[in-house]
Length: 354
Ligand code: NAD
Ligand code: UFG
Image (tube, rainbow, N blue to C red; front, top):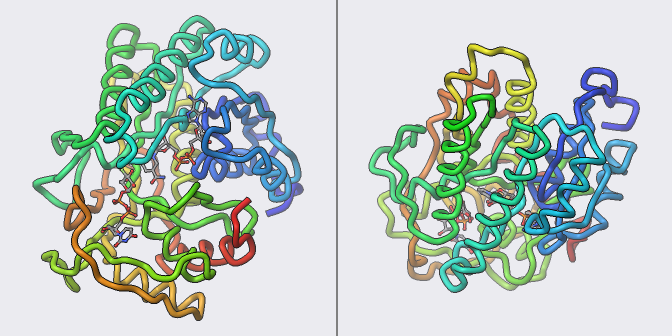
């Protein structure tokens, strides 16, 4: 998609504040927003992303988005940004996200994720901005008793990261209860993978990747020797773990659908807020299936060894997406092959990331 394809007119009034907009999911969502004619303003402290993302976004959309380097905990800096722009809605991605790290450094996670969110919500309130889409996670369900997981599955977070997400969800519920004018959409992501099809932006983890897809990509490109498969004795089709992998551009488009919903004036809808919505494909895929799909699209052999189960892992997790389809009129379009193909294009064209 080039700059000329951007529908600048349709939402020319809508300035959307995107916290964490230089990060993995945020940058892809910024592209989707710009392509729909929204005007994103990014706030990010660059603790887990690079400034060069902005140029790459410009390469795809024809224009670099407005960017402020600021920490969400800096309420004063945030206030200035809200005073400078007429923000209509906020998409709140900024946060720390590594489960293992959160177990080791809970205070850091609670401080950054919860205090950062409180600072943001206070500034929104002061500036009369009351529409928000929040990045939550399927990890809040913990070990769900029933699969596929529907939104009414009782939350049972098992680590500080997931608990920080659940606490922020509850804070947003309370804010809406106190002032029903707030329009809140909580999106619970399953496993986002892949990259923009241009190969210009993608996932660029610092250090050794924790997650499956970036690890496979780095093995394929020669940065790592072999993949370790964490257990093949689960009660699944081939014994390896099952997850609901969702293409990051499908996820980005899910945010655009949620934004359309809250930007539309429709008072009757407010009663149903906050909306809690799963974003996934509704299909599970095993680790072995993912490895095979990646080998097929990349033409590279992925050496692996099977090791013991990773502590805290569950056998299978995938979403019931009935509600997302109904409420957002959105569903995923991209296959596992698309996810692997786009991840491989990004990794092979940017072997060391940004
Ligand atoms: P990411 O780390 O790539 O992006 C998060 C961005 O937030 C980074 O650019 C970081 O610099 C910024 N940030 C962090 N703390 C900040 C602060 N206090 N002030 C300003 N900026 C700050 O992560 P991502 O994968 O793009 O995830 C985005 C959101 O989605 C996160 O909230 C994450 O918890 C959630 N989520 C991610 C996944 C996943 O697997 N990637 C799954 C479920 C939910
Ligand atoms: N896996 C391996 N080897 C690896 C990495 C992962 O075999 O090197 C396996 C895991 O055991 C699991 C599957 O690949 O069976 C997926 O693991 P990921 O680490 O990619 O993803 P998780 O489902 O464990 O967790 C991710 C994020 C969480 C988020 C959750 C749901 O890390 O933050 O998805 O959205 F909450």
